[in-house]
Amino acid sequence: MTTVPVTSFQQSLGELPPDNIIFGHSEAVQAIRAQLARVAAANVPVLITGESGTGKDIIARLIHGLSPWKVGPFVKVNCPAIPGTLLESELFGYEKGAFTGAFGAKPGRVEMAHRGTLFLDEISELDHSLQSKLLQLLQDGQFCRIGAQEDKKVEVRVVCATNRDLQTEIENGTFRQDLFYRINVVNLRMPALRERRTDIEDLCRYFLEYYNRKFNCRARPLSAEVLAVLHKYHWPGNIRELENLIKRYVILGHEDALTSDLVHREPDFLNPDISFDGPVSLKKLTRQAVRELERKVILKVLQQHHWNRKQSARTLGISYRALLYKIRDAGLPSNRALRLRQAEEAMPKTGAAAD
Ligand SMILES: Nc1ncnc2c1ncn2[C@@H]1O[C@H](COP(=O)(O)OP(=O)(O)O)[C@@H](O)[C@H]1O
Ligand SMILES: [Mg+2]
Image 1: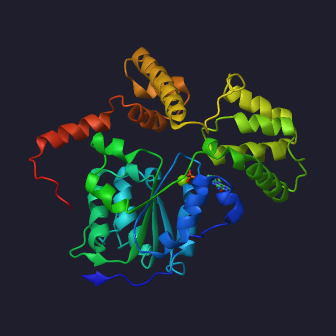
Image 2: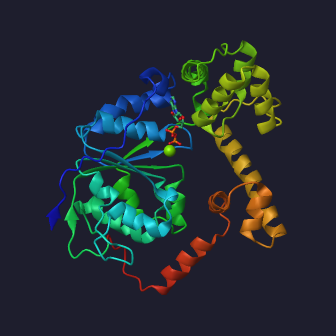
Image 3: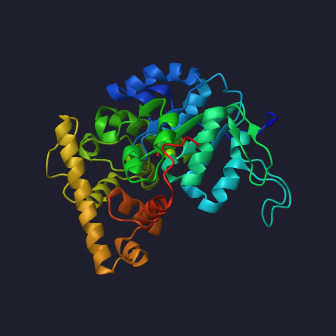
């Protein structure tokens, strides 16, 4: 076995918003802030969960920045962005001649993260074979480049993020339970923006100043009326959506564009005066209702197109990939789930093998 030398590879941590903006006032985020330094200091895997746009990336970078490995590399892998077949070589690297076109050896991101942090974003997108390789890495720090004769050893701190419910993925057979336990030693759940509405005003002010400076603009502070509208909105895209909205406002310079944009996104959002900060059951019911509506629309469109998913995606105005996600989220049968289940049924049972 060889030990990987320390590399100079470093993905920039980038510019982070100030602490008071990242954490705001809500209890849910304050609880994360309270844990962060201790979590960062311990060499244990961390799983960051939360809807898209809630700041999972920011938290991963903070963990690295607060950790004893902060002088080491921070290496992010956006799992769904790299096509399945390439992901293995991207993650674990390959040796010369491992496959046609492998003219030289290439280290993977795992090696590049040696003595630093490996951030695996959208971890639920790893297929089963890569899940197994990752499990081995987490168990003993070892992995194998494609085409290599022997294992290599690295010291990496692994941080994973997902906006999916991994328990459901486990039930669907698309995520390994043993891997889940390994990556989920510490779980940080980022609250949705509608769960931290008290922070909306500060976030607006922050983004307004930030983009005014960045674009050399002079957009005026938002009026109380507009802030009230923003306060009520349900923010499915969370802080990312708020940031983009303010960015557009700064560029366009007038509030009408901003409010009409929101009305367009959610026709009846001004109608029911529902506060999602209320009891848990309310939150649950509303979430279920939204999911159910989405499920019904998707199902209708799929049926209309005789389950042709490419055509359905076009009709729905979303990408093919996004539709596949939604099909899975809605618990509708997806090709991949069906294939995996068939493959598993065809395989002899070996118990809960850990590698
Ligand atoms: N607490 C926050 N304070 C300021 N900006 C934030 C915060 N959380 C997220 N953002 C901004 O919102 C966008 C999405 O954040 P990101 O960390 O990529 O979310 P996620 O990884 O959960 O999808 C980024 O531009 C980020 O800078
Ligand atoms: Mg992200």
